[in-house]
Amino acid sequence: MRTLISTAFVSLDGVVEAPGGESDYRNAGWTFKDVEFLPEAYEIKGQEQSEATAMIFGRVSYEGFAPVWPAMEEFAEYKDMPKYVVSTTLPESSLVDGWGRTTILRSLDDVAALKETEGGPIIMHGSVRLHHSLSDAGLIDRYHLMVFPLLLGAGERLFSDTDKDTQKLKLVEHKAYANGIQKVIYDVVR
Amino acid sequence: MQPPEPAPKRTGPRPTARRIVAHAFMTLDGVLVAPEERQREPDGERLTLLRDDDGPADPPLAAGGAVPTTARTDDTMAQLAALKRQPGRDIVVTGGDTAIRALLQAGLVDDLHLRVHPLVAGHGPHLFPDTGSRIPLTLVAASASPTGVLHLRYRPD
Image (tube, rainbow over all chains, first blue to last red; front, side, top):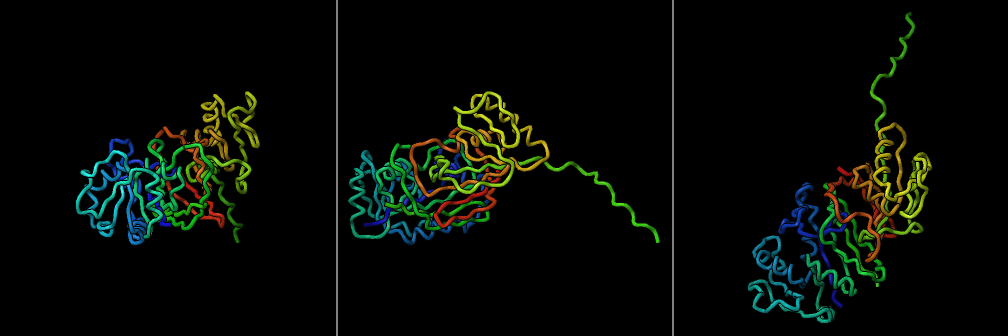
């Protein structure tokens, strides 16, 4: 079974909304506003790019990343990777060219089926709503988190507050950087 | 030979204000962890903050005293702020559903010891409020236990 990895920038209080400044969210751009930039704190981004063999997105994240990521040097390895967008509404005509073979998945069953195919890890960036659904359905296998040293108070959170059984995790890696960012990797225990 | 000079009297400023050290226990998704699962107690003068529905109307706010966290939260915060200004040992606050949240929002926490458990709880009371201002923090120390619990020390900026 292929590993589905969720990778996210998250505040200490679990907020993931608009880390790069892309919306009207009050605290947009929080990954660079209060925290000193340290290149090595982002080492996981290179590591996961080398490991991943496919990408998966929710519609909103796909629409946000697709116009910009194909040309970005720091995401060069992602360019030709197969991509999957989970959406009941996104039309084929909205898919961009030149960013790898992209398939639209219409249900969580499709995601589960994708995990049963041959191949290496599938990585999910952003995609908050999709993340909630996949996490609640037990389809996520691993978390790559960059935890920023701040409390944001308001904003969309990485995890939903669905009433479900407590999920156990196994800490795989933990590293703190001089600017207060932490790299934390967990496997989901089944 | 002259006798030695007597040592000069100390005349500098009084010892610095007390610090509020908060110990909190949460899951990865920020849900409070039950008391029976918490780790080792810290040192310092203990102030036990009770759940919302407990506690007498007007308890003494002193060593080992219990402080209710009902509608008198504003009073409680004011009392704690006053206590901080006096010299003395650290004031240690452990657990408490709304207590640490209120302290953080009031800007009274000097040292936050957070133990993040390797669990995703989903539903449940959260440690951090989902309204309120943005608080930048400084990570003072971080380590992980063999069971995967992160022990993080933060100082609000």
